[in-house]
Image (tube, rainbow, N blue to C red):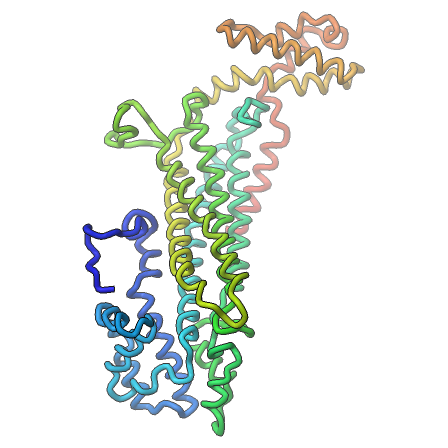
Length: 466
C-alpha cells in the first residue's frame, strides 16, 4: 500500500491517458476519502440532533472533516486489513474530543455505499453534459447538411441515395434515446441510507431506544445533509441492481458512439473517401508509412466502447451472485469497473465530439460516388413506374437485374457504360416508356423519398429537448 507511484511501477491507462481530469477527480482516492468523511460528518450531525453527539464533539468532527492523510491511512491499512477502518482510525485520532462518536451505529457499507451513490450521481451528471453537447453539435450538422445528397449503403454496398442530414439524424436519434434513458437511470441511483449490517436498522433501533428520535428520522436527517435519497429496502449494501442499470446505460451510449465512429472509419477509407478528420501538419498516421491518414481517433473510441460494454457481465454478476444478505465478492470488481466505465465513456464522448467538430466532407468524393453508383439506385423508381404503367413487376425486375449485372461487369473491366443506355435497348421496357421518359428517371438525386421532411421534423423534436 505504501509503494511510490512513479514510472517504475504499473500505472493504469486511465491515470493519464483516458478520461478527463474532472472525471478522474470524482473517482480519485482523495475525493473518495473526503466523501467518506462527509458521510461520517453527516451521520454525526444527525446524531447530534438526536442527542447522541454533543455540540463540542460535533464541532471537533467538523473541524477535522477535510484533514485527510492518505499515506497515513494506507499505512494503517497494512495492519488492520480494512480500508475504511484504517481511515476511520486516522480520522478518530485527529478528533480528540469527538473521535469516539464517529461511525456510531453504522456498518462499513453505510459509509461506502452512500459515497459510491454520490460518485455515480456526479459522474452521470458529467456524462449528461457531454452527451448534450454532442447532441447540440449533431443538431448543427443535421441542419447544415439536410440538403446534401449522398449515396446510402446497405451491406457495405451502394444502395440508394439519402442525405447526409438524414444520416446524422439517425446517429442523433440513438443518442437522444440514450440521454432520455440516462435521465431515468439517474432517478434510480440512491444510496443505502442508514440500514446497518443486514438492512434492518437494528443497530439504530438499539441506539435510539428511549430517545425522541426514530431510526427513520435519523436516516432522513442524514440523507438531507448529504443531498441524496436512499433505497427503501437494502441488505448490507444498496442493491447491486443499481450498478447494473448504470453500466447498462453507459454501455448503451457506448453502442451509439461506436456506431457513429465505425461509420466514420468506413467513410474515411479512400474506397469511399467521403469523410475525413481535419489533421494538423505534425500529426503522424504511421511510423512506417508516412502517407497514411489513419482514422486513429475514431478507432480509439471504438476500442474504448468495447471496454465499456465488457463491464456489463461484471455488473450483472455482482447483482445476481451477491448471496443472501451480502457476500464480498462484488467489492474488488466494483472498484474497477465503475470508475473505469465512466472514465472510458467520458473519453469516448470527448473524442467523438472532436471528431464531429473536425469532420470534413469531401464533396468531390460524394459527387463521384453518386455519379458512379447512383444510376443503379435509380432502378427502383424505374421499376415502380413500369409497374404503374402495366408491366409485370417480376419480369421487369429480372430484365433490370440482367442489365445491371452486365453494366457492373463492364465497369469492373474499366469500361465506361451507362446502365440506362443498356435499359433503353430493352424492347420489353420500351413498350411502356419512351427513351426520354426512361432517361428522366435516371437522376438519383430525385430519389431520396422523405429524407428532407423527416430530417426537419426530427431536428425540431431534438431542439425542443435540448
